[in-house]
Image (cartoon, rainbow, N blue to C red):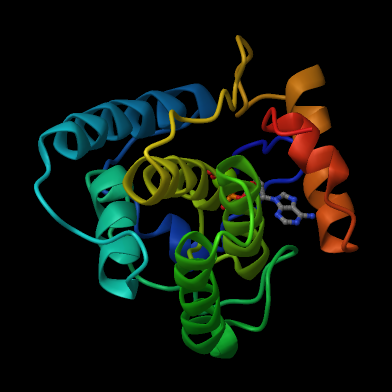
Amino acid sequence: MFKEPDGATPLDPDEIGGLKFDHITTRGELDELEQANITQALQWLGRRRGGDILTEEFIRTLHRRLFGEVWSWAGSFRLREKNIGIDPFQIPVQLRYLLDDARYWPANGTYPPLEAAARFHHRMVQIHLFPNGNGRHARIAADILLSDYFGHPPIEWANGFDLQADNLRRGDYIAALRAADGGVFDPLLDFVGAG
Ligand SMILES: Nc1ncnc2c1ncn2[C@@H]1O[C@H](COP(=O)(O)OP(=O)(O)O)[C@@H](O)[C@H]1O
Ligand SMILES: [Mg+2]
């Protein structure tokens, strides 16, 4: 139905059924609605008091805030297999492992801040928690980790490009994630400015 850029997860018909607006026919219309929702969520994030990014509850709340005006399933874990991501049945336990690992890193100085954020981001999108919006959610989540656990400024993810469209920056981003899938992290570290 909607043409996706390379490295995106197409929606199943029942997921498309969760769209809260009728009469959307183009990817551009959907992008605008999602972007308006994200803008509201970023304002909420700016005013927020409390909430720990290294908890399942806040991870889900963040997704619901980002996409809940557009998709009825926002904040609910994926139930379908996708071209990216683990078996949906394993999502809660793999997220638990990730959150436990990520909590260990700042406490023990395992990685410099940008590397911790890059590894956290990659594991989140590799698990692929939600039917859609995983990239955008996991980029914001990594920035919250940087801020709240390391007192570090956010990553320049887009760097002047639109990361939701096919362009050189997205090409580098997707290639870096694929390298990280194979255990090679240098391209992703370069991408986030930690190289
Ligand atoms: N090979 C890969 N390994 C891990 N993550 C990937 C891979 N390819 C793409 N991704 C991630 O998946 C995202 C696309 O998933 P999607 O749920 O459609 O997110 P969004 O709707 O925010 O773009 C990409 O932005 C990227 O973060
Ligand atoms: Mg998508």
